[in-house]
Amino acid sequence: MSLPIKILGAPGSPYSRKLRSVLRYRRIPHVWIQRGSKHQGHVPKTPVSLIPILVFPGSDGSYSEAAIDTTPLIRRLEGEYKERSVIPPDPALAFIDALIEDYADEWLTKCMFHYRWAFSQDVEYASRVLPYWHRFDLNDEEIRPMAKQFADRQVERLWVVGSNETTGPVIEQSYKRLLKLLSERLEESAFVLGDRPSSCDFGLFGQLTQLIQVDPTPLAVARAKFHRVVAWLDLVEDLSGLEADESDWTSRDAISDRLRALLGELGRVYTPFLLANARALETGAEKVECEIDGRPWIQKPFPYQGKCLVELRKHYAGLQTSDRAIVDKILAGTGCEPLIS
Image (cartoon, rainbow, N blue to C red; front, side, top):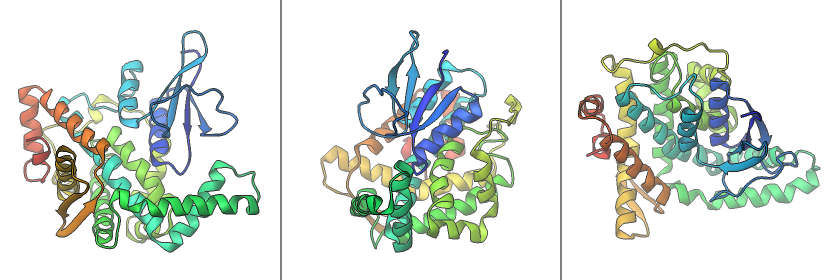
Protein backbone atom coordinates (compact mmCIF):
# COMPACT_ATOMS: atom_id res chain seq x y z
CA MET A 1 0.00 0.00 0.00
CA SER A 2 1.56 3.26 -1.15
CA LEU A 3 -0.72 5.41 0.97
CA PRO A 4 -1.12 5.20 4.76
CA ILE A 5 -4.25 3.78 6.31
CA LYS A 6 -6.55 6.46 7.70
CA ILE A 7 -7.85 5.92 11.21
CA LEU A 8 -10.82 8.16 11.90
CA GLY A 9 -11.37 8.36 15.63
CA ALA A 10 -11.60 10.56 18.70
CA PRO A 11 -9.54 10.89 21.91
CA GLY A 12 -12.64 10.14 24.00
CA SER A 13 -13.28 6.86 22.18
CA PRO A 14 -11.61 3.88 23.93
CA TYR A 15 -11.79 1.79 20.77
CA SER A 16 -10.10 4.54 18.75
CA ARG A 17 -7.25 4.63 21.25
CA LYS A 18 -7.06 0.83 21.22
CA LEU A 19 -6.69 0.58 17.46
CA ARG A 20 -4.30 3.50 17.15
CA SER A 21 -1.97 1.95 19.71
CA VAL A 22 -2.00 -1.33 17.71
CA LEU A 23 -1.08 0.54 14.52
CA ARG A 24 1.72 2.34 16.34
CA TYR A 25 3.15 -0.82 17.88
CA ARG A 26 2.99 -2.73 14.60
CA ARG A 27 4.59 0.20 12.74
CA ILE A 28 1.82 0.16 10.15
CA PRO A 29 1.83 3.43 8.17
CA HIS A 30 -1.25 5.39 9.18
CA VAL A 31 -2.62 8.86 9.79
CA TRP A 32 -4.89 9.74 12.70
CA ILE A 33 -7.79 12.03 11.77
CA GLN A 34 -10.48 13.37 14.05
CA ARG A 35 -13.75 11.77 12.95
CA GLY A 36 -16.07 14.34 11.41
CA SER A 37 -13.35 16.87 10.71
CA LYS A 38 -12.83 18.50 7.32
CA HIS A 39 -9.58 16.56 6.93
CA GLN A 40 -11.08 13.09 6.67
CA GLY A 41 -12.03 13.38 3.00
CA HIS A 42 -14.44 10.96 1.39
CA VAL A 43 -15.36 8.07 3.69
CA PRO A 44 -16.90 4.97 2.08
CA LYS A 45 -20.04 3.73 3.79
CA THR A 46 -19.86 1.33 6.73
CA PRO A 47 -22.71 -0.92 7.95
CA VAL A 48 -23.00 1.08 11.18
CA SER A 49 -21.78 4.58 11.98
CA LEU A 50 -19.28 3.81 14.73
CA ILE A 51 -15.74 4.89 15.52
CA PRO A 52 -12.99 4.22 14.87
CA ILE A 53 -13.18 3.74 11.14
CA LEU A 54 -10.23 2.41 9.19
CA VAL A 55 -10.12 3.67 5.62
CA PHE A 56 -7.93 1.51 3.40
CA PRO A 57 -6.21 2.74 0.24
CA GLY A 58 -6.90 0.77 -2.90
CA SER A 59 -4.50 -0.24 -5.64
CA ASP A 60 -5.62 2.76 -7.72
CA GLY A 61 -4.41 5.18 -5.04
CA SER A 62 -7.85 6.14 -3.77
CA TYR A 63 -9.33 5.47 -0.35
CA SER A 64 -11.93 3.00 -1.48
CA GLU A 65 -12.84 0.87 1.53
CA ALA A 66 -13.88 1.65 5.10
CA ALA A 67 -14.29 -0.87 7.92
CA ILE A 68 -15.26 -0.84 11.60
CA ASP A 69 -15.04 -3.09 14.69
CA THR A 70 -11.61 -3.24 16.29
CA THR A 71 -11.41 -6.97 17.04
CA PRO A 72 -11.90 -8.21 13.46
CA LEU A 73 -9.86 -5.27 12.17
CA ILE A 74 -6.90 -6.35 14.29
CA ARG A 75 -7.20 -9.87 12.82
CA ARG A 76 -7.44 -8.47 9.31
CA LEU A 77 -4.27 -6.48 9.84
CA GLU A 78 -2.58 -9.68 11.00
CA GLY A 79 -3.19 -11.12 7.54
CA GLU A 80 -1.97 -8.04 5.68
CA TYR A 81 1.10 -7.20 7.78
CA LYS A 82 3.31 -10.02 9.05
CA GLU A 83 5.74 -8.27 11.37
CA ARG A 84 5.20 -7.58 15.07
CA SER A 85 2.07 -9.70 15.47
CA VAL A 86 -0.26 -9.05 18.40
CA ILE A 87 -1.78 -12.55 18.30
CA PRO A 88 0.15 -15.27 20.18
CA PRO A 89 1.33 -18.03 17.84
CA ASP A 90 0.25 -20.69 20.36
CA PRO A 91 -3.42 -21.42 19.48
CA ALA A 92 -4.35 -21.99 23.12
CA LEU A 93 -2.89 -18.65 24.20
CA ALA A 94 -4.51 -16.97 21.20
CA PHE A 95 -7.87 -18.09 22.57
CA ILE A 96 -7.04 -16.74 26.04
CA ASP A 97 -5.98 -13.50 24.38
CA ALA A 98 -9.31 -13.26 22.52
CA LEU A 99 -11.25 -13.97 25.71
CA ILE A 100 -9.53 -11.21 27.71
CA GLU A 101 -9.85 -8.77 24.80
CA ASP A 102 -13.56 -9.56 24.64
CA TYR A 103 -13.91 -8.86 28.37
CA ALA A 104 -12.15 -5.54 27.95
CA ASP A 105 -14.28 -4.49 25.00
CA GLU A 106 -17.63 -5.65 26.34
CA TRP A 107 -17.42 -5.57 30.16
CA LEU A 108 -14.77 -3.02 31.04
CA THR A 109 -16.57 -0.59 28.76
CA LYS A 110 -19.47 -0.80 31.24
CA CYS A 111 -17.08 0.57 33.87
CA MET A 112 -16.02 3.35 31.52
CA PHE A 113 -19.58 4.35 30.63
CA HIS A 114 -20.79 4.06 34.24
CA TYR A 115 -18.10 6.24 35.75
CA ARG A 116 -18.36 8.85 32.98
CA TRP A 117 -22.12 9.33 33.15
CA ALA A 118 -23.22 8.26 36.65
CA PHE A 119 -21.15 10.72 38.74
CA SER A 120 -21.95 14.42 38.64
CA GLN A 121 -18.34 15.63 38.49
CA ASP A 122 -17.57 13.20 35.69
CA VAL A 123 -20.67 14.20 33.73
CA GLU A 124 -19.73 17.85 34.11
CA TYR A 125 -16.15 17.25 32.97
CA ALA A 126 -17.00 14.96 30.05
CA SER A 127 -19.80 17.19 28.80
CA ARG A 128 -17.39 20.13 28.74
CA VAL A 129 -14.36 18.41 27.18
CA LEU A 130 -15.74 15.84 24.73
CA PRO A 131 -17.53 18.37 22.49
CA TYR A 132 -14.28 20.33 22.12
CA TRP A 133 -12.56 17.18 20.88
CA HIS A 134 -15.06 17.34 18.05
CA ARG A 135 -14.97 21.11 17.43
CA PHE A 136 -12.46 23.04 19.51
CA ASP A 137 -12.82 26.08 17.22
CA LEU A 138 -16.29 26.90 18.59
CA ASN A 139 -16.71 29.50 21.32
CA ASP A 140 -18.19 28.71 24.72
CA GLU A 141 -21.66 29.96 23.81
CA GLU A 142 -21.77 27.78 20.71
CA ILE A 143 -20.50 24.68 22.49
CA ARG A 144 -22.75 24.92 25.58
CA PRO A 145 -26.00 23.59 23.99
CA MET A 146 -24.05 20.84 22.21
CA ALA A 147 -22.48 19.80 25.51
CA LYS A 148 -25.81 19.66 27.33
CA GLN A 149 -27.52 17.72 24.55
CA PHE A 150 -24.67 15.20 24.41
CA ALA A 151 -24.55 14.72 28.20
CA ASP A 152 -28.32 14.33 28.50
CA ARG A 153 -28.34 11.68 25.79
CA GLN A 154 -25.51 9.71 27.35
CA VAL A 155 -26.94 9.82 30.89
CA GLU A 156 -30.24 8.53 29.53
CA ARG A 157 -28.36 5.60 27.95
CA LEU A 158 -26.84 4.35 31.21
CA TRP A 159 -29.50 1.65 31.41
CA VAL A 160 -28.33 0.24 28.07
CA VAL A 161 -25.03 -0.92 29.60
CA GLY A 162 -26.74 -2.02 32.81
CA SER A 163 -25.69 0.88 35.03
CA ASN A 164 -28.14 1.77 37.81
CA GLU A 165 -28.21 2.18 41.60
CA THR A 166 -28.31 -1.60 42.13
CA THR A 167 -25.59 -2.57 39.65
CA GLY A 168 -23.35 0.46 40.27
CA PRO A 169 -21.47 -1.16 43.19
CA VAL A 170 -20.88 -4.31 41.09
CA ILE A 171 -19.36 -2.25 38.30
CA GLU A 172 -17.21 -0.15 40.63
CA GLN A 173 -15.86 -3.10 42.62
CA SER A 174 -15.11 -4.95 39.39
CA TYR A 175 -13.07 -1.98 38.15
CA LYS A 176 -11.10 -1.80 41.38
CA ARG A 177 -10.39 -5.53 41.34
CA LEU A 178 -9.23 -5.31 37.74
CA LEU A 179 -6.73 -2.60 38.65
CA LYS A 180 -5.36 -4.74 41.48
CA LEU A 181 -5.19 -7.94 39.43
CA LEU A 182 -3.61 -6.22 36.43
CA SER A 183 -1.06 -4.47 38.65
CA GLU A 184 -0.09 -7.80 40.21
CA ARG A 185 0.21 -9.48 36.82
CA LEU A 186 2.42 -6.63 35.55
CA GLU A 187 4.86 -7.36 38.36
CA GLU A 188 5.57 -10.66 36.60
CA SER A 189 5.69 -9.58 32.96
CA ALA A 190 5.51 -6.40 30.95
CA PHE A 191 2.17 -7.40 29.42
CA VAL A 192 -0.70 -9.77 30.16
CA LEU A 193 0.62 -12.68 28.10
CA GLY A 194 4.34 -12.11 28.34
CA ASP A 195 6.94 -9.50 27.58
CA ARG A 196 5.35 -8.43 24.32
CA PRO A 197 1.84 -7.01 23.88
CA SER A 198 -1.09 -8.96 22.52
CA SER A 199 -4.51 -7.77 21.41
CA CYS A 200 -5.91 -8.11 24.94
CA ASP A 201 -3.38 -5.57 26.23
CA PHE A 202 -4.63 -3.06 23.70
CA GLY A 203 -8.25 -3.86 24.60
CA LEU A 204 -7.57 -3.15 28.26
CA PHE A 205 -5.53 -0.10 27.33
CA GLY A 206 -8.35 1.43 25.28
CA GLN A 207 -10.90 1.38 28.09
CA LEU A 208 -8.36 2.41 30.72
CA THR A 209 -7.33 5.49 28.73
CA GLN A 210 -10.74 6.92 29.58
CA LEU A 211 -10.98 5.59 33.13
CA ILE A 212 -7.48 6.68 34.14
CA GLN A 213 -6.58 9.53 31.81
CA VAL A 214 -9.89 11.36 31.37
CA ASP A 215 -12.67 10.83 33.91
CA PRO A 216 -12.05 12.27 37.41
CA THR A 217 -13.61 9.62 39.66
CA PRO A 218 -12.00 6.43 38.25
CA LEU A 219 -8.78 8.38 37.68
CA ALA A 220 -8.62 9.15 41.41
CA VAL A 221 -9.16 5.47 42.23
CA ALA A 222 -6.24 4.43 40.03
CA ARG A 223 -3.87 7.18 41.14
CA ALA A 224 -4.49 6.47 44.82
CA LYS A 225 -3.04 2.94 44.77
CA PHE A 226 -2.34 1.56 41.30
CA HIS A 227 0.61 3.58 40.07
CA ARG A 228 2.05 0.64 38.11
CA VAL A 229 -1.07 0.50 35.93
CA VAL A 230 -1.04 4.28 35.46
CA ALA A 231 2.57 4.10 34.24
CA TRP A 232 1.87 1.04 32.04
CA LEU A 233 -0.95 2.93 30.37
CA ASP A 234 1.35 5.79 29.44
CA LEU A 235 3.82 3.35 27.88
CA VAL A 236 1.26 1.34 25.88
CA GLU A 237 0.12 4.57 24.21
CA ASP A 238 3.05 4.20 21.81
CA LEU A 239 5.06 0.98 21.73
CA SER A 240 6.59 1.61 18.30
CA GLY A 241 10.06 1.51 19.84
CA LEU A 242 9.61 -1.82 21.62
CA GLU A 243 11.62 -4.64 20.06
CA ALA A 244 9.72 -7.89 20.48
CA ASP A 245 10.95 -11.46 20.15
CA GLU A 246 9.00 -14.70 19.74
CA SER A 247 10.48 -15.93 23.02
CA ASP A 248 8.71 -13.08 24.83
CA TRP A 249 5.35 -14.87 24.79
CA THR A 250 4.24 -16.67 27.94
CA SER A 251 4.51 -20.44 27.60
CA ARG A 252 1.32 -22.49 27.81
CA ASP A 253 3.10 -24.51 30.47
CA ALA A 254 3.94 -21.46 32.59
CA ILE A 255 0.55 -19.90 33.31
CA SER A 256 0.97 -18.12 36.63
CA ASP A 257 -1.48 -17.94 39.50
CA ARG A 258 -1.76 -14.19 38.92
CA LEU A 259 -2.81 -14.67 35.32
CA ARG A 260 -5.37 -17.24 36.49
CA ALA A 261 -6.60 -14.73 39.07
CA LEU A 262 -7.15 -12.20 36.30
CA LEU A 263 -9.14 -14.80 34.38
CA GLY A 264 -11.08 -15.41 37.59
CA GLU A 265 -12.37 -11.85 37.40
CA LEU A 266 -13.79 -12.62 33.95
CA GLY A 267 -15.49 -15.68 35.39
CA ARG A 268 -16.85 -13.67 38.29
CA VAL A 269 -18.57 -10.91 36.33
CA TYR A 270 -18.39 -11.40 32.56
CA THR A 271 -19.39 -15.07 32.34
CA PRO A 272 -22.77 -14.72 34.10
CA PHE A 273 -23.60 -11.64 32.04
CA LEU A 274 -22.73 -13.23 28.68
CA LEU A 275 -24.72 -16.36 29.45
CA ALA A 276 -27.76 -14.42 30.68
CA ASN A 277 -27.60 -12.11 27.67
CA ALA A 278 -27.53 -15.15 25.36
CA ARG A 279 -30.56 -16.65 27.11
CA ALA A 280 -32.48 -13.41 26.77
CA LEU A 281 -31.69 -13.20 23.06
CA GLU A 282 -32.65 -16.83 22.50
CA THR A 283 -36.00 -16.49 24.28
CA GLY A 284 -36.84 -13.01 23.03
CA ALA A 285 -36.91 -11.62 26.56
CA GLU A 286 -37.01 -7.86 26.94
CA LYS A 287 -34.53 -7.90 29.82
CA VAL A 288 -31.31 -9.65 30.78
CA GLU A 289 -31.80 -10.81 34.35
CA CYS A 290 -29.17 -12.61 36.41
CA GLU A 291 -27.06 -12.33 39.53
CA ILE A 292 -23.52 -10.98 39.37
CA ASP A 293 -21.32 -10.88 42.42
CA GLY A 294 -24.30 -11.45 44.71
CA ARG A 295 -26.42 -8.63 43.28
CA PRO A 296 -29.26 -8.63 40.76
CA TRP A 297 -28.30 -7.51 37.28
CA ILE A 298 -30.91 -6.19 34.86
CA GLN A 299 -30.33 -4.57 31.48
CA LYS A 300 -31.51 -4.58 27.88
CA PRO A 301 -30.31 -7.58 25.79
CA PHE A 302 -27.38 -6.74 23.55
CA PRO A 303 -27.24 -8.60 20.21
CA TYR A 304 -23.57 -7.79 19.61
CA GLN A 305 -22.56 -9.36 22.91
CA GLY A 306 -24.57 -12.41 21.93
CA LYS A 307 -22.41 -12.55 18.81
CA CYS A 308 -19.32 -12.30 21.00
CA LEU A 309 -20.25 -15.49 22.85
CA VAL A 310 -20.93 -17.27 19.57
CA GLU A 311 -17.53 -16.21 18.20
CA LEU A 312 -15.70 -17.30 21.35
CA ARG A 313 -17.32 -20.73 21.15
CA LYS A 314 -16.54 -21.02 17.44
CA HIS A 315 -12.93 -20.10 18.18
CA TYR A 316 -12.72 -22.76 20.89
CA ALA A 317 -14.42 -25.41 18.73
CA GLY A 318 -11.94 -24.71 15.94
CA LEU A 319 -8.94 -25.56 18.10
CA GLN A 320 -7.17 -28.88 17.84
CA THR A 321 -8.11 -31.35 20.59
CA SER A 322 -4.73 -30.94 22.27
CA ASP A 323 -5.07 -27.14 22.27
CA ARG A 324 -8.59 -27.31 23.69
CA ALA A 325 -7.20 -29.46 26.49
CA ILE A 326 -4.68 -26.71 27.31
CA VAL A 327 -7.40 -24.06 27.29
CA ASP A 328 -9.51 -26.24 29.59
CA LYS A 329 -6.55 -26.59 31.95
CA ILE A 330 -5.88 -22.84 31.98
CA LEU A 331 -9.53 -21.95 32.62
CA ALA A 332 -10.17 -24.65 35.24
CA GLY A 333 -11.46 -23.04 38.42
CA THR A 334 -11.68 -19.52 36.94
CA GLY A 335 -15.44 -19.51 36.41
CA CYS A 336 -14.95 -19.06 32.66
CA GLU A 337 -15.64 -22.74 31.86
CA PRO A 338 -19.36 -22.25 31.03
CA LEU A 339 -18.40 -19.92 28.20
CA ILE A 340 -16.99 -22.83 26.23
CA SER A 341 -19.04 -25.75 27.51
